[in-house]
Image (cartoon, rainbow, N blue to C red; front, top):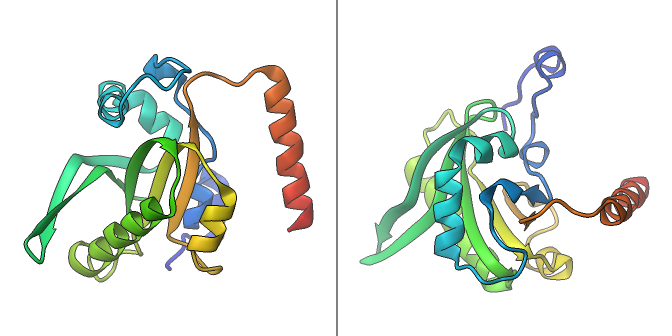
Amino acid sequence: MKTLPLDFVSWHGYCHTPKDAVKDPYVLEFLGLQELPTYSETELETRIIDHLQQFLLELGKGFAFIGRQVRFTFDEEHFRVDLVFYNRLLRCFVLFDLKIGELKHQDIGQMQMYVHYYDRKIKLEDENPTIGIILCKDKNRAVVEMTLPEDNSQIFASKYETVLPRKEDLQRLLTEQMEENAEA
């Protein structure tokens, strides 16, 4: 993967690897969805499109919106990617699959297929590999670790929150992240 010069990255505060571009969790409070799971994936997607500017800000730097429900076909079967973005800093497509429930290994397999398709049929030779992000309400880390290869750098699962976490939850998450980083 091509990276930006370190002085450019440091000065602009940009990420230079796919993992740097992925947040976990994404805070989508601006969508106005209830904390209870009373909405559909279609409604989640519609709210994101309705609030695209805020969603782009939540994603971070360099993202450009390409499309919604982007269809591709092979072997006479149609598939649709929920949201497609391009990150001009990473020089790659970023695909989002939205899940309102718990992440399942089938969801990861589906995203792997989307990413492989984009890498083989859509991206240009001088672009970097496609990134796939499964945005889910509940993420099972064990399922992610067992489904993806250890050297994975293209497929990510991230939780989303429809309301800002309470102060106690933020402190707990911060402590967990610090412990994880200390172990790494």
